[in-house]
Amino acid sequence: MALAALISAYQLANDETEGLRATLPLAGRTLVEHQARLAGYAGAEQILILAERIPVALAQAVERLRRSGLKVDITRDVADAADRIHPEEKLLVIGDGCLASPPVVERMAEAQGPSLLTVPDEPEHAIFERIDATARWAGLMMVDGAFLRDTAAMLGDWDMESTLLRRAVQANAQRMDVTTGNGRGRTGRIPLLVDGVAHLEGFDRLMLAGARPRGRDWTWRHIFPAIENLVAAPLLRRAVDPVWFAVGSVTAAVIAGIFFGVDWRLAGQAALMVSGPIAAVAERLAGARLSPLRWARAFLIARGIAASGALVVLCYGIAEEAGWGAWLIGATILLAMAALIGEQRILKRLPGGLAPHWVASLDGLIWAMTPFALIGQWFAGIAVLALYAIASFAVVQREVASRVAVRTAGPA
Image (cartoon, rainbow, N blue to C red; front, side, top):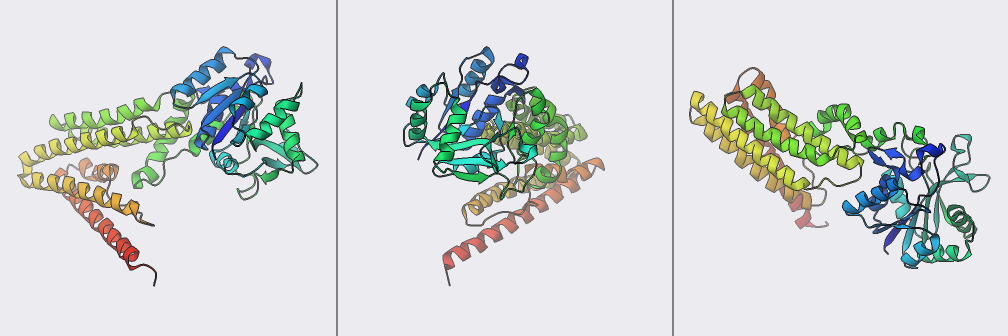
């Protein structure tokens, strides 16, 4: 069943000079843009923003969302919204100013039948609307198009959110306590109900914390996060387009080849080293905004080609000093890595197939070369990289063979 989303965007912030809650600044954009991306992340194919008036900031936010590929429209009243939603279509309702973590929104999007996200009726949750003596509404609701149409028919001058909430309660909607099964009080789990700029302080750090790339090699897991944490938050607040960092990562790899060509080897090694963190920052910024990095695969391939070119240039310089063996070693690295990538693709398609994080990769090879570069042992360095790549290929190939054997053997 298709999923749509309805986002309320008509309430003023606590300080009226700040405008609507929906247009409060968040991570260089607006709060409603993050809400819409949350809905899209959860699978919403159509996103409606209910706004009684359309200030310039809201219109600009909707236009940016449309350019990013989301199907977003503004509706001026509930009746119009109800006409745009199929009666059998699931509808995720996001309260005005409600910010939740992606896992919480996904959890609500998977709910069947009328459902309410709730928090316990306790003093620290007083900002949320009370349902009864034990629970408060946490700002997310799941209904369907028919339920919205019935509500619109009886709404009159009543507030849409409150009326939907009361009808859902009367219909014995399933209650999903956000503090149950998610670690009560864990940072970022309980939704945030924003009523002013002050409430958003620090939320960008939560966005970044939930966007760290995972499942990569040892450099992406243990080295790059420290660098990302220093630079990503200021860049997120300034609405920097992550694609420029992806361009920068490829450019750094190209510059490394130039440096190797003029025999500035340490500078070339440094350029290769920084290309990885720059690429990681690009992915981190895109992930924090719940927006896929444009042309991500093309940038990944381009950086790999540029780094391979830099290796060829480096081997040319080493060969002039140590003989033709440098060419043989360089070719071994490239061939072993090509074979390794092929085996990793096969492994990913096998049940439970996952290569160890320590196996060779582009950034793993670059950073493994650093100690040899610092002491000037370039020939020894590329020789070790060749052994590293070959050993990694052997390990992954063995894992593939093991998985294939288990799959073909079948149940005992």
